[in-house]
Amino acid sequence: MEDFSIIILFLFVLFLLLGTGVWVGLALMGVAWVGMELFTTRPVGDVMLTTIWSSSSSWTLTALPLFIWMGEILYRTRLSEDMFRGLSPWMAGLPGGLVHTNIVGCTVFAAVSGSSAATLTTVGKMSIPELRKRNYPEPMIIGTLAGAATLGLMIPPSLTLIVYGVTINESISKLFFAGILPGLVLAAMFMAYVAVMSKVSKSWNPDAEPPMTFAQRVQNSRSLIPVILLIMVVIGSMYLGYATATEAAAFGVIGGLILAASQGSLTWKTFTASLMGATRTSAMIALILAGAAFLSLSMGFTGLPRGLADLIAQMELSRFELLMVLLVFYIILGMFLDGISSVVLTMAVVEPMVRQAGIDLIWFGIFIVVVVEMAQITPPIGFNLFVLQGMTHHEMGFIARAGFPMFLIMVVMVFVLIAFPEIATWLPDNIRKGPGGG
Image (cartoon, rainbow, N blue to C red):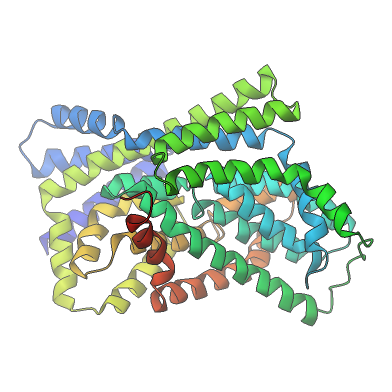
Protein backbone atom coordinates (compact mmCIF):
# COMPACT_ATOMS: atom_id res chain seq x y z
CA MET A 1 0.00 0.00 0.00
CA GLU A 2 2.92 2.31 0.82
CA ASP A 3 4.22 1.83 -2.75
CA PHE A 4 0.93 3.11 -4.17
CA SER A 5 0.96 6.22 -1.96
CA ILE A 6 4.51 6.99 -3.17
CA ILE A 7 3.44 6.46 -6.82
CA ILE A 8 0.42 8.75 -6.39
CA LEU A 9 2.60 11.44 -4.81
CA PHE A 10 5.24 11.18 -7.58
CA LEU A 11 2.56 11.33 -10.31
CA PHE A 12 0.79 14.27 -8.64
CA VAL A 13 4.02 16.30 -8.46
CA LEU A 14 5.00 15.31 -12.03
CA PHE A 15 1.65 16.29 -13.60
CA LEU A 16 1.51 19.46 -11.50
CA LEU A 17 4.91 20.55 -12.84
CA LEU A 18 4.19 19.47 -16.45
CA GLY A 19 0.77 21.13 -16.31
CA THR A 20 2.32 24.47 -15.31
CA GLY A 21 4.54 24.37 -18.41
CA VAL A 22 7.82 23.36 -16.74
CA TRP A 23 10.27 21.63 -19.12
CA VAL A 24 10.16 17.82 -18.94
CA GLY A 25 13.79 17.55 -17.70
CA LEU A 26 13.22 20.07 -14.89
CA ALA A 27 9.88 18.44 -13.98
CA LEU A 28 11.67 15.07 -13.53
CA MET A 29 14.28 16.74 -11.28
CA GLY A 30 11.47 18.36 -9.26
CA VAL A 31 9.75 15.01 -8.67
CA ALA A 32 13.07 13.42 -7.69
CA TRP A 33 13.83 16.29 -5.29
CA VAL A 34 10.46 15.88 -3.53
CA GLY A 35 10.97 12.10 -3.29
CA MET A 36 14.47 12.47 -1.82
CA GLU A 37 13.37 15.13 0.69
CA LEU A 38 10.36 13.15 1.93
CA PHE A 39 11.66 9.57 1.91
CA THR A 40 15.44 9.73 2.56
CA THR A 41 17.88 11.46 4.87
CA ARG A 42 20.60 11.95 2.24
CA PRO A 43 21.79 15.47 1.25
CA VAL A 44 19.67 16.06 -1.88
CA GLY A 45 21.83 18.78 -3.43
CA ASP A 46 25.01 16.67 -3.36
CA VAL A 47 23.24 13.61 -4.78
CA MET A 48 21.62 15.70 -7.55
CA LEU A 49 24.90 17.33 -8.63
CA THR A 50 26.76 14.00 -8.69
CA THR A 51 23.99 12.23 -10.64
CA ILE A 52 23.55 15.02 -13.22
CA TRP A 53 27.30 15.21 -13.79
CA SER A 54 27.76 11.44 -14.19
CA SER A 55 24.76 11.13 -16.55
CA SER A 56 25.89 14.11 -18.65
CA SER A 57 29.55 13.04 -18.94
CA SER A 58 28.77 9.59 -20.42
CA TRP A 59 31.05 8.86 -23.42
CA THR A 60 28.28 6.78 -25.04
CA LEU A 61 26.09 9.88 -25.13
CA THR A 62 28.55 11.63 -27.46
CA ALA A 63 26.98 9.79 -30.41
CA LEU A 64 23.69 11.60 -29.82
CA PRO A 65 24.61 15.22 -30.76
CA LEU A 66 26.74 13.96 -33.67
CA PHE A 67 23.91 11.94 -35.23
CA ILE A 68 21.50 14.85 -34.64
CA TRP A 69 23.97 17.20 -36.38
CA MET A 70 24.33 14.84 -39.34
CA GLY A 71 20.54 14.82 -39.79
CA GLU A 72 20.37 18.62 -39.47
CA ILE A 73 23.06 19.08 -42.16
CA LEU A 74 21.22 16.84 -44.63
CA TYR A 75 17.84 18.38 -43.73
CA ARG A 76 19.14 21.77 -44.87
CA THR A 77 20.59 20.57 -48.20
CA ARG A 78 18.96 19.85 -51.58
CA LEU A 79 18.79 16.17 -50.61
CA SER A 80 14.97 16.06 -50.59
CA GLU A 81 14.60 17.19 -54.23
CA ASP A 82 17.35 14.81 -55.37
CA MET A 83 15.77 11.94 -53.44
CA PHE A 84 12.36 12.27 -55.12
CA ARG A 85 13.97 12.53 -58.57
CA GLY A 86 16.07 9.43 -57.83
CA LEU A 87 13.29 7.28 -56.32
CA SER A 88 10.24 8.10 -58.45
CA PRO A 89 11.29 6.25 -61.67
CA TRP A 90 11.68 2.98 -59.72
CA MET A 91 8.45 3.38 -57.70
CA ALA A 92 6.13 4.36 -60.58
CA GLY A 93 5.71 0.76 -61.80
CA LEU A 94 4.74 -0.69 -58.38
CA PRO A 95 1.07 -1.15 -57.35
CA GLY A 96 0.39 2.11 -55.52
CA GLY A 97 2.79 4.08 -57.70
CA LEU A 98 4.60 7.12 -56.34
CA VAL A 99 3.04 6.90 -52.85
CA HIS A 100 5.84 4.38 -52.23
CA THR A 101 8.34 7.28 -52.48
CA ASN A 102 6.96 8.44 -49.08
CA ILE A 103 7.83 5.10 -47.48
CA VAL A 104 11.13 4.40 -49.26
CA GLY A 105 12.18 8.05 -48.91
CA CYS A 106 11.50 7.93 -45.15
CA THR A 107 13.39 4.62 -44.86
CA VAL A 108 16.44 6.04 -46.68
CA PHE A 109 16.43 9.34 -44.79
CA ALA A 110 15.84 7.55 -41.45
CA ALA A 111 19.13 5.74 -42.08
CA VAL A 112 21.03 9.05 -42.08
CA SER A 113 18.95 11.11 -39.67
CA GLY A 114 17.75 9.30 -36.54
CA SER A 115 15.00 11.84 -35.95
CA SER A 116 11.34 11.23 -36.81
CA ALA A 117 10.59 14.96 -37.15
CA ALA A 118 13.56 15.60 -39.48
CA THR A 119 12.57 12.58 -41.60
CA LEU A 120 8.95 13.74 -41.84
CA THR A 121 9.83 17.33 -42.72
CA THR A 122 12.49 16.46 -45.30
CA VAL A 123 10.51 13.78 -47.14
CA GLY A 124 7.22 15.71 -46.79
CA LYS A 125 8.75 18.82 -48.40
CA MET A 126 9.68 16.77 -51.45
CA SER A 127 6.71 14.41 -51.82
CA ILE A 128 3.52 16.26 -50.80
CA PRO A 129 3.58 18.84 -53.68
CA GLU A 130 4.62 16.20 -56.24
CA LEU A 131 1.98 13.63 -55.20
CA ARG A 132 -0.79 16.27 -55.06
CA LYS A 133 0.19 17.38 -58.57
CA ARG A 134 -0.37 13.81 -59.76
CA ASN A 135 -3.83 13.47 -58.09
CA TYR A 136 -2.99 10.83 -55.49
CA PRO A 137 -5.63 10.56 -52.68
CA GLU A 138 -4.85 13.09 -49.95
CA PRO A 139 -5.51 10.72 -46.96
CA MET A 140 -3.03 8.23 -48.45
CA ILE A 141 -0.34 10.91 -48.95
CA ILE A 142 -0.75 12.16 -45.36
CA GLY A 143 -1.19 8.73 -43.74
CA THR A 144 1.83 7.03 -45.33
CA LEU A 145 4.00 10.02 -44.51
CA ALA A 146 2.85 10.09 -40.85
CA GLY A 147 3.48 6.35 -40.43
CA ALA A 148 6.70 5.95 -42.42
CA ALA A 149 8.37 8.98 -40.79
CA THR A 150 8.33 7.06 -37.50
CA LEU A 151 10.92 4.70 -39.04
CA GLY A 152 13.41 7.42 -38.03
CA LEU A 153 12.99 6.10 -34.47
CA MET A 154 13.98 2.52 -35.40
CA ILE A 155 16.33 2.36 -38.36
CA PRO A 156 19.84 3.26 -37.17
CA PRO A 157 21.04 5.78 -36.19
CA SER A 158 17.99 6.03 -33.91
CA LEU A 159 18.04 8.70 -31.18
CA THR A 160 15.48 6.72 -29.14
CA LEU A 161 17.68 3.59 -29.25
CA ILE A 162 20.73 5.64 -28.15
CA VAL A 163 18.74 7.03 -25.19
CA TYR A 164 17.39 3.54 -24.32
CA GLY A 165 20.91 2.06 -24.50
CA VAL A 166 22.36 4.79 -22.26
CA THR A 167 19.47 4.43 -19.78
CA ILE A 168 19.83 0.65 -19.33
CA ASN A 169 23.61 0.55 -20.01
CA GLU A 170 23.34 -1.66 -23.12
CA SER A 171 25.51 -1.66 -26.28
CA ILE A 172 24.34 1.05 -28.73
CA SER A 173 25.86 -0.82 -31.69
CA LYS A 174 23.90 -4.02 -30.88
CA LEU A 175 20.69 -2.02 -30.51
CA PHE A 176 21.35 -0.37 -33.88
CA PHE A 177 21.76 -3.74 -35.59
CA ALA A 178 18.63 -5.03 -33.84
CA GLY A 179 16.65 -2.16 -35.40
CA ILE A 180 17.61 -2.80 -39.04
CA LEU A 181 15.45 -5.86 -39.89
CA PRO A 182 12.32 -4.78 -37.93
CA GLY A 183 12.57 -1.35 -39.58
CA LEU A 184 12.69 -2.92 -43.05
CA VAL A 185 9.85 -5.36 -42.20
CA LEU A 186 7.66 -2.46 -41.00
CA ALA A 187 8.47 -0.46 -44.18
CA ALA A 188 7.50 -3.54 -46.25
CA MET A 189 4.18 -3.81 -44.34
CA PHE A 190 3.42 -0.13 -45.08
CA MET A 191 4.20 -0.73 -48.79
CA ALA A 192 1.97 -3.83 -48.88
CA TYR A 193 -0.89 -1.77 -47.41
CA VAL A 194 -0.42 0.89 -50.12
CA ALA A 195 -0.38 -1.80 -52.85
CA VAL A 196 -3.64 -3.35 -51.56
CA MET A 197 -5.39 0.04 -51.18
CA SER A 198 -4.41 1.05 -54.73
CA LYS A 199 -6.39 -1.96 -56.00
CA VAL A 200 -9.48 -1.70 -53.76
CA SER A 201 -9.93 2.07 -53.23
CA LYS A 202 -12.48 3.81 -55.49
CA SER A 203 -10.77 7.20 -55.03
CA TRP A 204 -7.45 5.92 -56.41
CA ASN A 205 -7.09 7.55 -59.82
CA PRO A 206 -3.64 9.20 -60.14
CA ASP A 207 -2.18 10.55 -63.38
CA ALA A 208 -0.04 8.06 -65.29
CA GLU A 209 3.73 8.57 -65.28
CA PRO A 210 5.52 8.89 -68.65
CA PRO A 211 7.44 5.70 -69.53
CA MET A 212 11.23 5.75 -68.95
CA THR A 213 14.01 3.53 -70.25
CA PHE A 214 16.32 1.73 -67.81
CA ALA A 215 19.17 4.09 -68.74
CA GLN A 216 17.00 7.15 -67.95
CA ARG A 217 16.09 5.65 -64.55
CA VAL A 218 19.76 5.07 -63.70
CA GLN A 219 20.57 8.62 -64.89
CA ASN A 220 17.90 10.06 -62.55
CA SER A 221 19.18 7.94 -59.63
CA ARG A 222 22.71 9.34 -59.69
CA SER A 223 21.79 11.84 -56.97
CA LEU A 224 20.87 8.97 -54.62
CA ILE A 225 24.34 7.37 -54.78
CA PRO A 226 26.04 9.79 -52.30
CA VAL A 227 23.27 9.21 -49.73
CA ILE A 228 23.52 5.41 -50.10
CA LEU A 229 27.31 5.66 -49.71
CA LEU A 230 26.89 7.72 -46.54
CA ILE A 231 24.53 5.08 -45.07
CA MET A 232 27.04 2.35 -45.97
CA VAL A 233 29.91 4.26 -44.32
CA VAL A 234 27.96 4.88 -41.08
CA ILE A 235 26.46 1.39 -40.68
CA GLY A 236 29.30 -0.50 -42.43
CA SER A 237 32.00 1.01 -40.19
CA MET A 238 30.15 -0.34 -37.13
CA TYR A 239 29.42 -3.74 -38.72
CA LEU A 240 33.04 -4.29 -39.76
CA GLY A 241 34.29 -3.32 -36.30
CA TYR A 242 36.20 -0.26 -37.52
CA ALA A 243 34.12 2.18 -35.46
CA THR A 244 31.99 2.45 -32.35
CA ALA A 245 28.58 4.17 -32.62
CA THR A 246 30.21 7.49 -31.61
CA GLU A 247 33.00 7.20 -34.19
CA ALA A 248 30.48 6.18 -36.89
CA ALA A 249 28.47 9.31 -35.99
CA ALA A 250 31.61 11.43 -36.52
CA PHE A 251 32.12 9.79 -39.95
CA GLY A 252 28.46 10.62 -40.68
CA VAL A 253 28.91 14.31 -39.83
CA ILE A 254 32.04 14.58 -42.02
CA GLY A 255 30.24 12.71 -44.83
CA GLY A 256 27.19 14.96 -44.48
CA LEU A 257 29.34 18.10 -44.71
CA ILE A 258 31.14 16.73 -47.80
CA LEU A 259 27.79 15.79 -49.38
CA ALA A 260 26.31 19.24 -48.71
CA ALA A 261 29.48 20.95 -50.06
CA SER A 262 29.45 18.82 -53.22
CA GLN A 263 25.79 19.80 -53.82
CA GLY A 264 26.72 23.44 -53.45
CA SER A 265 24.24 23.89 -50.59
CA LEU A 266 26.77 24.20 -47.72
CA THR A 267 26.84 27.92 -46.95
CA TRP A 268 27.85 29.60 -43.71
CA LYS A 269 24.13 30.17 -43.04
CA THR A 270 23.15 26.47 -43.45
CA PHE A 271 26.24 25.38 -41.46
CA THR A 272 25.42 27.59 -38.45
CA ALA A 273 21.68 26.76 -38.68
CA SER A 274 22.45 23.01 -38.61
CA LEU A 275 24.84 23.49 -35.67
CA MET A 276 22.31 25.54 -33.66
CA GLY A 277 19.49 23.09 -34.47
CA ALA A 278 21.62 20.16 -33.29
CA THR A 279 22.67 22.07 -30.14
CA ARG A 280 19.06 22.88 -29.18
CA THR A 281 17.85 19.30 -29.68
CA SER A 282 20.88 17.77 -27.90
CA ALA A 283 20.55 20.13 -24.93
CA MET A 284 16.84 19.27 -24.59
CA ILE A 285 17.53 15.50 -24.63
CA ALA A 286 20.53 15.84 -22.27
CA LEU A 287 18.38 17.75 -19.75
CA ILE A 288 15.66 15.05 -19.93
CA LEU A 289 18.28 12.31 -19.43
CA ALA A 290 19.85 14.15 -16.48
CA GLY A 291 16.41 14.58 -14.87
CA ALA A 292 15.59 10.93 -15.51
CA ALA A 293 18.89 9.75 -13.98
CA PHE A 294 18.18 11.76 -10.82
CA LEU A 295 14.58 10.44 -10.70
CA SER A 296 15.81 6.83 -11.15
CA LEU A 297 18.20 7.28 -8.20
CA SER A 298 15.50 8.90 -6.08
CA MET A 299 13.08 6.08 -6.85
CA GLY A 300 15.80 3.54 -6.06
CA PHE A 301 16.20 5.07 -2.58
CA THR A 302 12.45 4.81 -1.97
CA GLY A 303 12.52 1.14 -3.04
CA LEU A 304 9.66 1.79 -5.48
CA PRO A 305 11.03 -0.01 -8.61
CA ARG A 306 11.83 -3.18 -6.64
CA GLY A 307 8.44 -3.05 -4.89
CA LEU A 308 6.58 -2.72 -8.20
CA ALA A 309 8.66 -5.47 -9.82
CA ASP A 310 7.83 -7.75 -6.85
CA LEU A 311 4.15 -6.82 -7.16
CA ILE A 312 4.15 -7.75 -10.86
CA ALA A 313 5.96 -11.01 -10.01
CA GLN A 314 3.28 -11.87 -7.44
CA MET A 315 0.59 -11.34 -10.10
CA GLU A 316 2.34 -14.15 -12.02
CA LEU A 317 1.72 -12.62 -15.43
CA SER A 318 3.06 -14.59 -18.35
CA ARG A 319 5.63 -12.85 -20.56
CA PHE A 320 2.93 -12.24 -23.19
CA GLU A 321 0.51 -10.74 -20.62
CA LEU A 322 3.28 -8.46 -19.28
CA LEU A 323 4.07 -7.26 -22.81
CA MET A 324 0.37 -6.57 -23.47
CA VAL A 325 0.13 -4.52 -20.24
CA LEU A 326 3.25 -2.56 -21.28
CA LEU A 327 1.88 -2.10 -24.82
CA VAL A 328 -1.31 -0.44 -23.52
CA PHE A 329 0.66 1.51 -20.89
CA TYR A 330 3.09 3.01 -23.44
CA ILE A 331 0.33 3.82 -25.96
CA ILE A 332 -1.53 5.79 -23.25
CA LEU A 333 1.66 7.45 -22.02
CA GLY A 334 2.66 8.28 -25.60
CA MET A 335 -0.54 10.25 -26.10
CA PHE A 336 0.89 12.85 -23.72
CA LEU A 337 4.71 12.54 -23.88
CA ASP A 338 7.26 12.30 -26.69
CA GLY A 339 9.10 8.99 -27.21
CA ILE A 340 12.40 9.85 -25.53
CA SER A 341 10.63 11.23 -22.43
CA SER A 342 8.44 8.09 -22.25
CA VAL A 343 11.50 5.81 -22.33
CA VAL A 344 13.63 7.64 -19.73
CA LEU A 345 10.66 8.35 -17.45
CA THR A 346 9.63 4.69 -17.10
CA MET A 347 12.79 2.64 -17.49
CA ALA A 348 13.72 2.70 -13.78
CA VAL A 349 10.48 0.85 -13.00
CA VAL A 350 10.06 -1.20 -16.18
CA GLU A 351 13.62 -2.57 -16.49
CA PRO A 352 13.51 -4.71 -13.29
CA MET A 353 10.15 -6.21 -14.38
CA VAL A 354 11.49 -7.05 -17.84
CA ARG A 355 14.69 -8.62 -16.43
CA GLN A 356 12.64 -10.64 -13.92
CA ALA A 357 10.41 -11.94 -16.75
CA GLY A 358 13.53 -13.11 -18.61
CA ILE A 359 12.90 -10.86 -21.64
CA ASP A 360 15.96 -10.06 -23.79
CA LEU A 361 16.76 -6.35 -23.25
CA ILE A 362 17.98 -5.84 -26.84
CA TRP A 363 14.68 -7.28 -28.15
CA PHE A 364 12.73 -5.21 -25.61
CA GLY A 365 14.45 -2.05 -26.93
CA ILE A 366 12.93 -2.72 -30.37
CA PHE A 367 9.54 -3.51 -28.81
CA ILE A 368 9.67 -0.17 -26.95
CA VAL A 369 10.61 1.72 -30.13
CA VAL A 370 7.68 0.25 -32.13
CA VAL A 371 5.25 1.20 -29.33
CA VAL A 372 6.79 4.67 -28.99
CA GLU A 373 6.46 5.06 -32.79
CA MET A 374 2.69 4.61 -32.40
CA ALA A 375 2.71 7.48 -29.90
CA GLN A 376 4.05 9.79 -32.63
CA ILE A 377 0.76 9.48 -34.56
CA THR A 378 -1.83 9.21 -31.75
CA PRO A 379 -3.79 12.31 -30.68
CA PRO A 380 -3.84 14.52 -28.68
CA ILE A 381 -0.03 15.03 -28.50
CA GLY A 382 1.15 12.93 -31.48
CA PHE A 383 4.23 14.91 -32.52
CA ASN A 384 4.16 13.85 -36.19
CA LEU A 385 0.53 14.99 -36.41
CA PHE A 386 1.52 18.51 -35.36
CA VAL A 387 4.39 18.63 -37.87
CA LEU A 388 2.04 17.46 -40.65
CA GLN A 389 -0.63 19.97 -39.63
CA GLY A 390 1.95 22.75 -39.97
CA MET A 391 2.95 21.48 -43.42
CA THR A 392 -0.51 20.75 -44.89
CA HIS A 393 -2.89 23.03 -42.88
CA HIS A 394 -5.41 20.17 -42.54
CA GLU A 395 -7.49 19.74 -39.38
CA MET A 396 -5.95 17.51 -36.72
CA GLY A 397 -8.88 15.07 -36.98
CA PHE A 398 -8.30 14.55 -40.72
CA ILE A 399 -4.58 13.88 -40.20
CA ALA A 400 -5.23 11.49 -37.28
CA ARG A 401 -7.78 9.52 -39.35
CA ALA A 402 -5.35 9.35 -42.29
CA GLY A 403 -2.61 7.99 -40.00
CA PHE A 404 -4.84 5.48 -38.16
CA PRO A 405 -4.26 2.55 -40.60
CA MET A 406 -0.51 3.01 -40.03
CA PHE A 407 -1.12 2.84 -36.28
CA LEU A 408 -2.93 -0.50 -36.76
CA ILE A 409 -0.06 -1.81 -38.91
CA MET A 410 2.35 -0.97 -36.05
CA VAL A 411 0.12 -2.91 -33.62
CA VAL A 412 0.38 -5.89 -36.00
CA MET A 413 4.17 -5.35 -36.04
CA VAL A 414 4.26 -5.72 -32.23
CA PHE A 415 2.63 -9.17 -32.52
CA VAL A 416 5.00 -10.12 -35.37
CA LEU A 417 7.93 -9.21 -33.08
CA ILE A 418 6.50 -11.30 -30.23
CA ALA A 419 5.86 -14.28 -32.55
CA PHE A 420 9.24 -14.03 -34.30
CA PRO A 421 11.72 -12.44 -31.84
CA GLU A 422 14.60 -13.46 -34.16
CA ILE A 423 13.69 -10.49 -36.40
CA ALA A 424 15.26 -8.26 -33.74
CA THR A 425 17.85 -10.61 -32.20
CA TRP A 426 19.34 -12.47 -35.19
CA LEU A 427 21.49 -9.64 -36.53
CA PRO A 428 23.05 -8.48 -33.21
CA ASP A 429 23.67 -12.13 -32.18
CA ASN A 430 25.48 -12.85 -35.43
CA ILE A 431 27.35 -9.54 -35.53
CA ARG A 432 28.78 -10.51 -32.13
CA LYS A 433 30.39 -13.53 -33.75
CA GLY A 434 31.10 -11.70 -37.02
CA PRO A 435 34.00 -9.55 -38.14
CA GLY A 436 33.26 -6.68 -35.75
CA GLY A 437 33.11 -8.83 -32.62
CA GLY A 438 31.29 -7.41 -29.60
